[in-house]
Amino acid sequence: MGEAPAFFVDNLQNGFSNGFGLKSKGFETFTDVGDKTFVIGGANSDSTSSVGIQIYDKSTGKWVIPTVLGTKPKTCKGHSAILLNEDRIMISIRGSTPDDCIWFLEVDTEYVKEQKKDFGTEVVAWSKGVTGEAEKPVVISGPSGVGKGTLINMLMKEFPSMFGFSVSHTTRAPRGMEKNGVHYHFTERNVMENDIKHGKFLEFASVHGNLYGTSIEAVEAVADSGKRCILDIDVQGARSVRASYLDAVFIFICPPSMRELEERLRARGTETEDQILKRLRNAEAEIEQGESSGIFDYILYNDNLEECYENLMELLGLGGSAPIKQKPLSKINKKMVINCETKEVGNEAKNLIILDVSSLKGGAPGRTRGLNIHAIDLFSDGLNGIRELR
Ligand SMILES: Nc1ncnc2c1ncn2[C@@H]1O[C@H](COP(=O)(O)OP(=O)(O)OP(=O)(O)O)[C@@H](O)[C@H]1O
Ligand SMILES: Nc1nc2c(ncn2[C@@H]2O[C@H](COP(=O)(O)O)[C@@H](O)[C@H]2O)c(=O)[nH]1
Image (cartoon, rainbow, N blue to C red):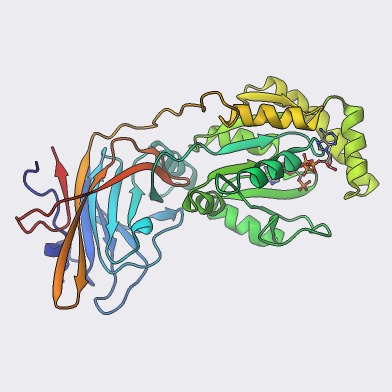
């Protein structure tokens, strides 16, 4: 089934100088991508630590500390690493739970190339691997008061295990019933601006005089819960997400008329007169863009709430017709064998699993979906680490 191992983690973890004149603290791995060597790790042998990244540029002979985007693995007692597709390093974390053990460090994906231009530095981006065929996130946009929140609440109530809400950050003040961390992360402007500067947001926009934004972490948290992510964001935000590398379905909710929109906003009773007028002024431009910008895959008219909800369910594949098909972003024809050592009392068992990375979808920013893991029988050749199947 397999040939020579592509990578043996245990051989590298005995503590040695890393070959580039930099003293290794142990637990490091070295992956060559073109002229660069990515040194990942740096935990002490007697403790766990977060996973650090350094790049050795062979063409200049210099070390570079890159800008690191995305949420990185929290702690690491050692790991294996293997290059996939020449653009991302797959990392198997030792001693972590099965749903937290496969991570990807993107080093030359389209997303990373784009970020390098923006930051003007070396950039790498973490993306955790999640198993199964998780569905694309759903972006729902529309003018204030059209009923986005109402429709999303109906969906989440009827399908609580299927959908998860991306909790945005905002600088606006909470309304009476709104809870921090549930409806929004209510934030100071300077804190949010600083986080934006450090690449923590997938998108952000100034909406009706306040700053709103979707953090990468908010989208990742939903993916980690195994649910399909729903984003309630304005048209500017939808445009940014469309331009980003998050592969999503975009739905615009339209009111039956401006008059009806005004009535709904007033009846909701959450805004002052000035704020209502501002939201209505913005609504006209939003509706025009929603209908004609080409950002949105679908437009739904929210006249009768029940009918609109039925149509939304239909679009999301919950109304009896076939679900929306996803196409993979990249094709990586590889299967790996991973050796997970489990120590039982007086006994050392070796559990081998096949990791199928041929159907990966998504990636940074957010999670890498479509990992398939199968348990397999023991090999008798003392295999350690990750090995490629050919
Ligand atoms: N089809 C409908 N017919 C009548 N009223 C509706 C309909 N859909 C929603 N509403 C009502 O309109 C008001 C605004 O709805 P909602 O708060 O869901 O809007 P929203 O688009 O989420 O607004 P915002 O962007 O400001 O958060 C609510 O009081 C809601 O009950
Ligand atoms: N671009 C973004 N827009 C967002 C986000 N979260 C919410 N919104 C939009 O803001 C308006 C106003 O919301 P409200 O709660 O103050 O009524 C509405 O259109 C939301 O869709 C976000 O993260 N990014």
